[in-house]
Length: 249
Image 1 (cartoon, rainbow, N blue to C red):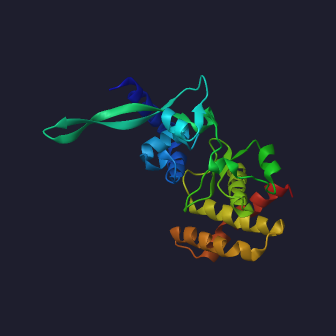
Image 2 (cartoon, one colour):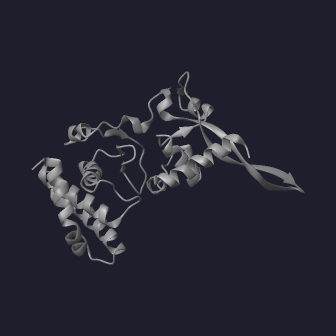
Image 3 (tube, rainbow, N blue to C red):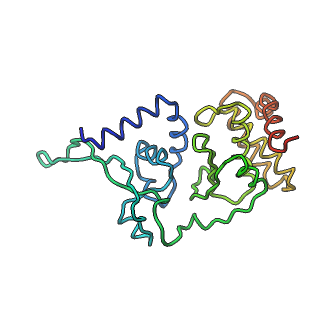
């Protein structure tokens, strides 16, 4: 086995042992449009996530966007299939490591998603908790996420409710000590119900957010075979703790 391929696979296995895999897979399941990683396998998107980024491309791919790899930057490696021709057919013969570079290791023309300006209530609180906040391109399924392993909120929207949802996840992590990997129904309802309450507190009109929040809560409550109302009742104690923590009541 190619040594670089072996290193990539060993790192994935190590992450299974440390328990990081569920979060990585959950976040990697949301491929972002209009960047090369959108077409990559889940395994390769997971490798990119573990490398501390969401956008990685080859040297020439970055050059085509008007960005250039910084001097001294180290590549990360993803896996690409290797084929050989046998009797007019292309047969998979194995995998090879392909070098790509993180967007954080490039400079040049700003990408469209880097131009989102964020001025949101409670951003200072997040920063005081040591949480880094950055912008990313979004897709039709999500507009941001909170990574507990990187203590990071990433946003593809300027909407307060999106930020409040992710901030509530961060607060809930402090309440519990550790969040479950993936999109746990209880954690998602806590985050959305807390975000809806925060929108009211900062003066955002209820009609702007309540319809979306209800549908979101209803969808996750169904996973536990509950109504939206029952789901909210189940988690109300944690919501209270989250809001107390955010406002230090």
